[in-house]
Amino acid sequence: MSAARLITFAVFALQGVSAAAAVSCEQLADIAYATEQLRNQGHSLTTVLAEADKLELSGKLTRDELDLIKGVVDRAFKSIQSPLEVLQSCRDKLKR
Picture 1: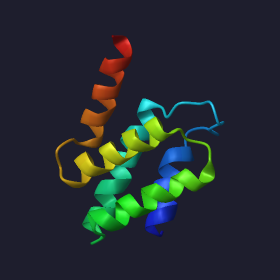
Picture 2 (picture 1 turned 135 degrees about the vertical axis):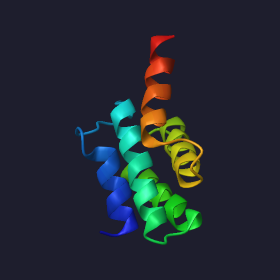
Picture 3 (picture 1 turned 120 degrees about the horizontal axis):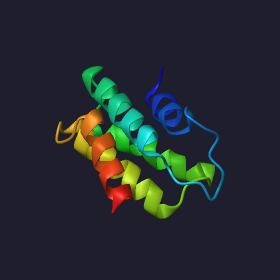
Picture 4 (picture 1 turned 60 degrees about the horizontal axis):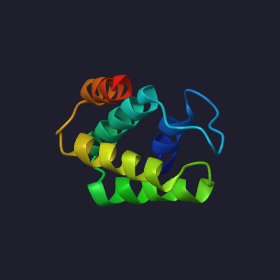
């Protein structure tokens, strides 16, 4: 599966996202997991982030959502946060 398809799949896999819908915590964890897989397959961070940039063309995500996704990609790629940590952090922020 190409990097673009894997990232796009991770974003839209759990639900059809409408223009006003936010990215769910589960989707962010899936993006972190997909990012780890791409890193392990030898893709560079630049390549993965470039594929994440292509999500902007869909018009279904806000700038804030795209920035959030890119942050998750960066942290997951660099092993700063695991997919589970991304999920927990997101859920914790929702509780506040």
